Length: 460
Image (cartoon, rainbow, N blue to C red; front, side, top):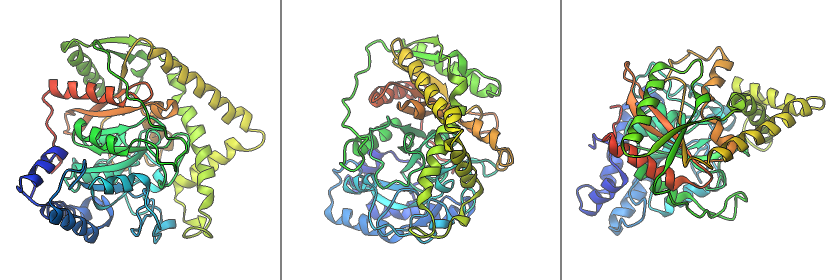
């Protein structure tokens, strides 16, 4: 039984030295799933047979040189997996079996990864808490009275509960970073166009990205190396040229981020992060992002408009059950999106939101002329209690105040664990950089974790 979280390197070193086998790794992760899944509702489908089949193949070959060889991986249930049920956590797709796999799933399989199962999430990825799943909420392994974060709730829960070494999520407005933040994990939202979304059930096409969750920055970097690049199936994807971090990097913190509602412990953590970077010789300066106050309003016009279009295919004829099976949040977003796109309101809402989005992009372009990355909270508070915001959709939407930025602008963002609240809940921050600056963010993240002597921890 593996009781402490392993990194990818530790996993592969152990496999190569025969400290344990791939089958024994699968045994360990499945034991955790069997012990805790019914209590925390993390996996919707467990692929025990497939996991053992791949593990036995790897053990027989005895070659663990692939970048993810032997790495047990969980997938948010919006990633198509050939022959494995994919529901998007919606009863509309309760029995849907895809005929092909997403590009990212294929890349992980080709790199030697082992699929352990499909994880719970907000239905069709609509949510910031993991409470909108048609199969019930995901409970936070750090404290089951609290949310895991959304929409990639199960993907974060799986890694933090030691049910999987790494996982894939999606990030449309923070859906990888916020769960990572609530579960003491590293989470990456890549540059729009860095990783193919082919075979990922779409939510908002101009905002969607493939996210990844793990215990360390090194593991996230390995996953990014495997996943990035053109596949000929997602026309937005390019092969990026990696940037080089300045010898004397400079970080910024926007004065607009210190808003009413920002938890004092989160504010204190950001100040500590600033001092840590300054201690290792990295300058941190105050800057201004003047259109910050428009982030959430713009996001909640653009996103529902695209959602209403993307969910049009789920009509009970081509896929699954009829539209009456949509949950409340999906209906809310369809109605809002249809409204802002309707005749008479398009100019007043959607067109205006797109103009303001351009202004927001301009803010960041100006900021990145003087700094290499921006430090920001991920969420205004640590994880909140289950049910706390469910009756107040507007309050729930405001949870996205810090994360929607990177999606609207199309830039990468890396969520990093930092400390714990007085009540024992994880608190972290994010670094945002210019387009295709992922490797710079990885380097900056590693510098921070090295300085605070960060050690991966699982919830139990």
